[in-house]
Length: 202
Length: 107
Image: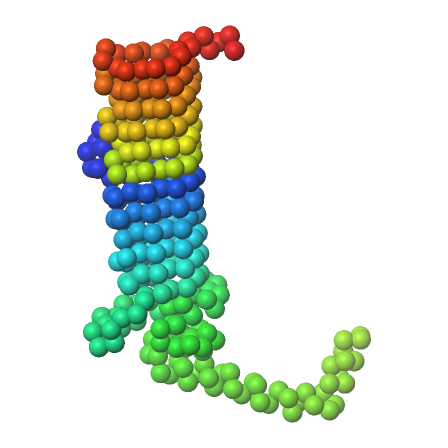
């Protein structure tokens, strides 16, 4: 039975296996168990749903269906599938985060020549946003991460994310933000403050 | 499917532990502890202390081997280190240097 896997030529870390240390290689690696430490491959890393990787990862491609805690640097692509959960920074020219994936960290797709890259990247990015939106309790970071290339403001991005079209969302985010801020000081002035204090004493 | 394979281009420097069979075609340095069988194939290089139930070695191993059941040194293997197990098999053609201890029950 071991021979069958041998024939496939891929490395598999089984579900009960724990590797603690440094792992390097020039072939595809499938993780169903745990790998902790450092992971460097010139090919593809596949973290299956049962797999846990707590490591700094440098690979060509990464497909995460399990759990990754650590930074991933890929020369080609990083994909978080609907079962994937990750905390850490991603650095890769192509980053795919599908609906259902959970991610907290930064995304850096690097610098791309403006003319060529925009049409290519605009398609995946519109797919990206719903993913981040659908997260149950997204801290500002994931939204910021996927949105950083377009917009700098984190808060705006989070609220804007609700709508598929970028423009109305942005307007909302800003309107939502601006009204509370200016009215607040005048209301709080004079009598209002005293009332607040009294309530606290009770 | 519960098998773990370390492919021929893989190098692991550290510790491997687990409860399933492990096949090594690549290089492992450090320590290996399993509750099942370890297979070091012809291309496999292990520089580690090994604690398992069974070991089958066709590749190179440098380090001490302790098995609760059996250690099998196959033809063409090269092993340097002490071997301790109730059953130890050394095939014709195997190269081995180290102590053999089959007397595990007394310890």
